[in-house]
Length: 413
Length: 166
Image (cartoon, rainbow over all chains, first blue to last red; front, side):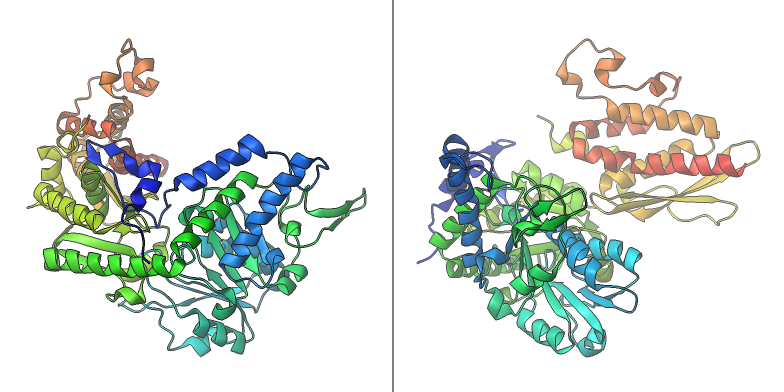
């Protein structure tokens, strides 16, 4: 079984034209499009089930609560979490990292402590540590990136010496690099540190098993995996969540409140203050059903095939006029293709490329991709990035390759 | 529908390919300011030399960016070199006015409020933008307005600093 050839039909957004051209969506690393099944599930929730959760005693509220908790169970199963109550819903991956920093980090980090991240992190896994470090005075160390786009693990033991937390991405959002998470988990645990994994680019594309990864925390977001914007996930082992102080305070997260103070309720609700995003959870659950139906092994196989096709097509057509960053072997990477294009001595600026491609209906992202430290290491100010997902096929790559030619015409010297 | 020809006018591409006043000036006496477009990572560095009569005797532009930000910076440098600080501020107002005019085709009564021109622009007097008018097509591509205005905002900071030093 593989990805159905007519899969685009499931995605209403992809049925339109822009600038009189069919929409070619190659920005799924930024956000994915949503299948009709996800849109329908969210509509149906509002049409048949909506009520506030965990507090109403009437049937409708019970069903709304079941919808939220049913989605949580789907997420837990999707990542092979040992228990459903280890899945905390957040607004997005960024909020999940802030939860990790403000709760676990604030309780465990101080002067003399160290957090290790890598040069290929998204700003969401950098800035919360900068912010907390400024308050708590711990050290932030960086795993370097090699010129061919891999983590440089040669001095890992030195880097990890005295570390309390290692927090790295499973797949780079710029280079597409797949990192060796089990190896990092072993090294982190050997050094007495915990391992947090940014799965934002990984979980949507690769079969995920938190137990096989050896991670202590896994963070990802719904909108990059066919689900809606407004819901993200922090998974952590139950005993870690039990020991962590709450993040946001308010309704839903308490056991008791008096004039003197409060006590927190049990996990995961301890970390979910206020009315949660129930329809978004339902949408994420429907996205997981859709992905399960495709089969995550097929999703990954399709991505490898398409990435291989893109690397071959673009390199053969443009030679030294194009440089695609990151690993050159599709099996070592995800379908996130950052590139610079133009004559070797005068590249066309990514912002101009994105503009020209847009006129051909092709959507790519241009800029620093919220990974400025990585781009500084790569010594490029910006890249263009095409990223694929289940609904892309070879015709989309062909359209990208064709549209790039037009930017040469405009900017040729 | 706006096409790429509206954006990438020949005079813009000329400035992009052969940027004027590129480089650095010695600081001091020059004032140096940096501007960033956090959206795309573009960076413009403006150096100005201002004499005792508040005349901008020299300007240099550094940094990197897309065709629009680089061409705008180049044209700006050519336009304000040799002008007074006051005239340079009028250029900034006039250029920002050009960038804040919503698409002319939108209709309406054409009043300044309708066109989104702020009050400063009315004070810009007889400033003639010349080649810079070629950038007005940028308004049809709203995400690119920040590319075009980056160097001008950076120049405004430089003028503030130069005035503060005086």
